[in-house]
Length: 305
Image (tube, rainbow, N blue to C red):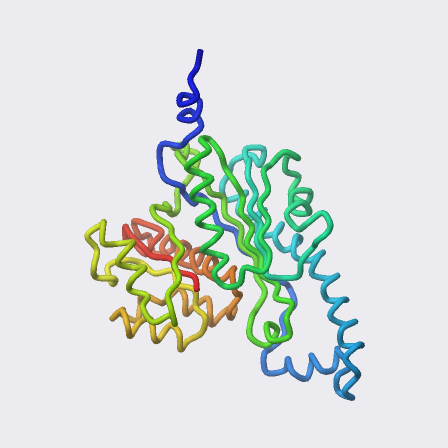
């Protein structure tokens, strides 16, 4: 008779969680930031200070719109990731869907809608996260690691979508979707590992004054104390935040190249942003023929705040 331990070991992967494909998508429509205030007041009829109730009606209409559009944008990104992965979607066993746009509850949920749009098997295990904010990209990666390493021969397609629905968000954040294929023990000659997830954690930094604590915890066991010989995939926040991170950690300007490029091209896409940066780094590393997708370096650091 087979023991419980033998069953558990048979299910677990031998190697670390590995990102095998990345797909991104942005809406086809674009509104220039400098013209957005005029546009917003015009489309909401706020030029004549329409009473609050009518503004609420407009917000409800927008909520109805994002409930439909968020899964569609997620599908576009996921389709690209699945194509890059090169494996049949029938091998996908888990779906993590995270969005900072609206809430489809009660109802089928964005994760269910994406499952239907992609034609995934009905018994795919789904995880839905709403309103996690800018650090959700890191949260998705933490869940990826736990799932991939505890489910042998298991692949999942996390879709990280951001279509911010708040008024403040419309002035600051941008729209975008990212999908990853994450698994473990990649098949040689068939799957192409991009990044391995070696260590993940979540920590609270009082007053956000000491990012070094998280870095020491992550890299001290590896004998790394200089943070310039590693690649950086940092959530942008804004130029001032990046300037402060560089200053406090003594980072060379090129360490934030991928982050600053995505910020300048797409703006701050909240939770999706850090995964766009990962895709940018992968593409540039491939373009220049570097030995790894992390700008030719072996180790790297991803942070979301």
